[in-house]
Structures are given as structure tokens and as C-alpha cells.
Image (cartoon, rainbow, N blue to C red; front, side, top):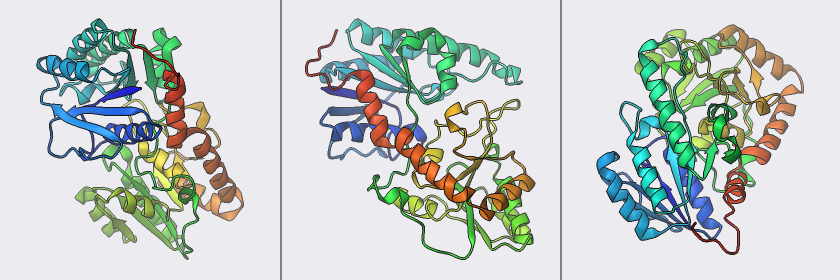
Length: 381
């Protein structure tokens, strides 16, 4: 069985889709499938994976590159093409109309396409009218790509609702951890070493929509109330946040970029992980399963403090600590959970949720079942 992944980004180009494709292709290859990745002609891309054939060959991701992509696809002749889709990944302005022509050509050649929609389109009612033409264009493109796809994978229910005309060929499969431990079965839930202080932190993006400033103010309140506490942010951090932590006189560490293994080791020492994401002027993003950072936190068995939002699925209910993005409320929730058995019980529930929903082995099994990759005989249509 031949599987071809098509993605513009692949490690060591940073990004969620890059990590996702890396782990998905690697796990599928370990199942005995013949997996190839067609990606960008970029010196940063690794091409020496043991089980996966990585082809960093595509120079242009636009209408001019369609012919080149088709030629490589025909050369491989895969049973399934899995295309990773984010509008802004294939177009600076987020309107990759050229992909429609690529899909039409692939369908003309009778190839089977599964599109993984990491994003579908920006919202129509964000309150920012200048983005309305882009929002409409992205919907048109998404509907055409969905129409031309044989199967569709989305990480959250919200994207399924947005593509509801194609619900009969859609499967919701969450995004897995983007810093997976080598021994995913056991090491992921090993208890952190004992310490006499609380570690609160986050990792990934420090853009303003993530409200890292609220994290720091919450730590300030905890410190002023006499708790031994430390804040750690894993990832690149703007200078203004470092300055803010210094002015607040709180113990804070900003690690900068770290290799996955080191980032995961630090994540496991967290007592609480804070995640807020303001999606637009009008909507909160909320805790969600399209975030590799959230999945990584669950893999480490760390309780997440977050709010509900536009992207939050009902399945999250009872598996995280709800809080509005308020320093005072974050303080109250942390104190409440530390005082009784709720903290231990929540950690146990997180482990259960991770095993049932977002472990990479589970994700790959869902792909195998959905695309019928284990049939003894399989031919292109």
C-alpha cells in the first residue's frame, strides 16, 4: 500500500502542520505501509528518515508548480494521497485557488485524495470587515477541495460543521502531541520529580492572543499570597514579556526554542499548563484538539487551565480546569485544586482521555480504519 503525503512544510521548517505530517507519516510507515512525503525544495527539510521517503522537490507552491507536482505523483503512483491543508500555507494571502486545479488534475488521473483540513476558513463575522472577501474566498476553495476529495479529516467538530455538506465523508481525528516522547506507552505518564514549589507554565506561541501577560499576573498573585511558585515558558518569547516578569518580581524562566526531547522533559515538571487563545476580536478560541501543544500537555499528564471557545469540542468537558483569562480567577482555581483530591483525580482523567483520544497510535489507527488501509486487496479507481 503506497501513501503519499503532500505538504509545503516538513521538519525542520517549524510549525504545527510540519510536526503533524512528520509524526503521522512515521507512524503509518511503522505499520508496514510504503509512505512518501512530497514537500518543498528547502535546505531545512530532513530527508534521511529510516521508514519514510522524503522528497524535498517542489520549488513553487502555485499554479506554476501544478505540473511538477503531478509528475512526481504519477511517478510514485500512490493508492492514497493525503494532502495537509491550511489556506495560508499555500498562499501568502490565504486564498490558494490554484489548489483546485491541482485537485482536478489528480482526479483526472484517478488518484484517491484524503484532505486533512487543519484550518478551513476564517470566520465571516469576526468583526473585521476587511477580511470578509478572504473569508468568502476561503470557503469557496474549501468547498471545492472537499467536493474533489474522496475522504476528509478534520481535527475538531467546528470544522466538520463548516463542511457539513460533505459530512458523509468526514472523520474527526484530533491532532497528536507535537513533542512525542520516544516511549509513548509508559514514559508519558511517569510522575515528575518531587519539588517544594509549584511550576506553572506554557509553551509554543507567545503571540498576544495567547495572553502570556495574564499568566504572569496570576503568578504574581500566587507569590504575593505566600506560595512558592515558578513560571516557565518554553519557546521564543518577546522582550516585553521578559521585562514584565522582571518588573513583577516573579521567578520566571523563558527557555527559548528547545529540541522536542528537552521541551517534553520540562513540560512534565509542570503542575499546571495555562492555555488561552483569542481567535478574533469577537471570539475566544478556547481549549481544542487542533493544537499540538494541548495534546502534548495531555500526553504529559499535566492539568490544563483554559476557557471554552469557538473551537472547543464537548468531549473536553470534565478534562480541564475552566477559567476565564483573568489572573484572579486563575489564582482561585489553582488554590481550589491544590486543596483537595480534585487535582489527583483530574490527572487520572487526563491520562484516560489521552489514551482514548489523542495518543498517536490511536490517531494512526483511526486513519487506517477510515481509509481502509488494511484491506488485503486495494486498487486505484
